[in-house]
Image (cartoon, rainbow, N blue to C red; front, side, top):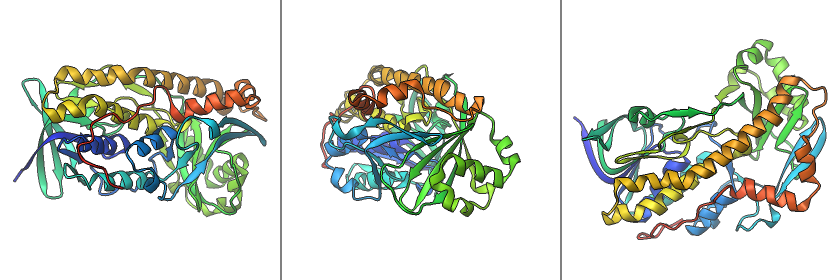
Length: 411
């Protein structure tokens, strides 16, 4: 027997864009249902970097203090180490934001916190293990989705459906949206290493001969991203575990004391990197946001934050009219118009960084990779470091919460 639900807004995907959109639309008075295909949020491939732009949104929602009680580490500067030479490229201490740092928070904590706050709203609900399989359409308009759940088939009818189900989006495929591939010359091997003594201002970016390793501080362990040329995972695995551990430890010496705790190449997971965007983000009754609309490179750790900015913009433009019953299909295009420039600008910067900084280190096998000239210039100027911090931390055209508050969000 098929279960049926009717809501104002159905959000497909319980990632950062999806849960934030769910909270904001419910806060504005729209009955909102988020559908998440997994049973929980415990997946290591999710991003950790919560930038000042996202922390600003939390402040505007009255959730910042409670949010920062969750386990996290704070980074006030971004630094890289190139063959042992440390260079600092951002200084967040003087940006115009409530939080002058990046918070590294495992994304399951982020998602659990936002959904926990949203569940206190009478208009919000979330269904876990609800895998969307198809769209419901009528007269060329999307009117909802079909999903499989542990309780059987589910049909959700909605006046607005939001696709936020990631770069492998089922909604995007079923809607027939065309994807423009921008290209990425890299992939990432993802693993963890226990962390010992803590030192201040540890580098995030580590470059050695032919290798780049990102070390994310998760308190008692490092979440590591070993950057490799696109399609190079099999070659790395063919060299074997001992070679991999030696390359990783030589690139980032801070992980060397515990690298032997990595005992199996099966614990090294491939994360395929893509940069793309849709030529259209909307059809009548349907809007795409976040990675579903534009997959981002991990360069700069901006993906989660850009996705949240999409959710804020969508709610600002659409939630009030949807709650009031005045939303039109023409309104949906306003979200892409608002967000396309920040997406294009950010992807342009990512492509430049990949092609001019990352790719040469990986492919030219320099004996001692040196910091790029632009990094040296920025590191010598306090003003440039602050400008770089603003670009990284707040992004291009940061969004602020403007959607109506018809229900109070509680932490």
